[in-house]
Image 1 (cartoon, rainbow, N blue to C red):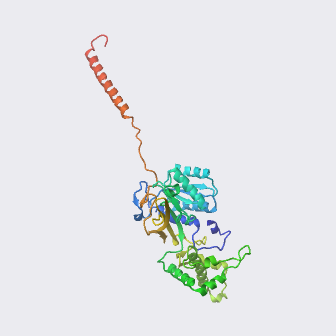
Image 2: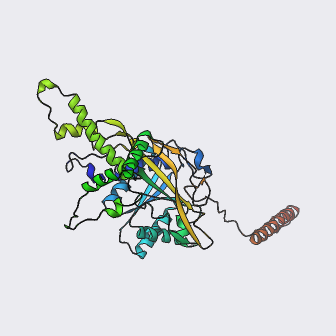
Image 3: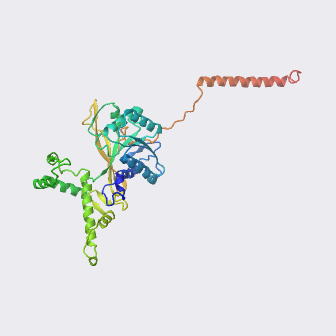
Length: 406
């Protein structure tokens, strides 16, 4: 939560993961590079462009501290990174009923925007919104693009949808933007993965780790951890959290060691104070398992441009789909690292192809022509008037000496 950046309440708080609204930085970078690039007519190939050239974005967010902070972060990032970009926000309560959802979706439709970013939970509310959006004609059309925050997570992949249903049409070609703890090929991340696997393969090490887990929960009841520790997948993958936790521990240790090494012995024995330790952490930069880590020295939160973000695309899973049901699978298409996006594979949009859709509806000119029949009658009458006018002119000239003409 961005609220944790408030130093008046959390003086010594620091973190190796960006706050939620910092996800707005890679979001805006993916949609609009700020170079004046635009996609008002569509037609770009996603894999060939640094950004999608989107100048109009609708943001729907849940009305709570998380959603409000995130939505505000998107607006701020757009103003700084892409001043020409227009961001319109739409708020919705977490317990919104169908009628409320339909009203908000109707307002989004009136904006005529074609790109939407959604900050919602729980998944049941997301389903309500996407169903209403499909019914309103702003999702599942092949022209509209929907992206979600990491609150959606894996709520789309693996589910079965009836072919032709609103959700089947709406969720195809959507995506989720989230922070990542690392990707294969990163030296420190690979080392962490290997180290965790070695722990998981050692009976003695697993037994020791199990002994460190709390025996009782908050209610004083005995806690059984075997469902986790006894799983074959235990310690086989670091997941989302482990790399950030590892880097947090390393950050605390490195900063303390640096203070000790730089301590002036003439000033007396070394004492590690909270102020010194915190300042050393937030002013440090090092390579961790989740990439090069640097902090915002004012807030203690990780700089989003030093973090790793991933864009996941939901596409049809051919092995789990048939003529009656469709199951989507997630595939990582883009990675944001060192402040820039790197494409791993093309992003497939709702249309099923990689051509970036337009950010506004196609423009057309309604000339409001008079029907052909009326035009023909008008031309005939015009001809009659011209002939009569010429005839009366000639007659008048010839009869100009008559008294009646004079």
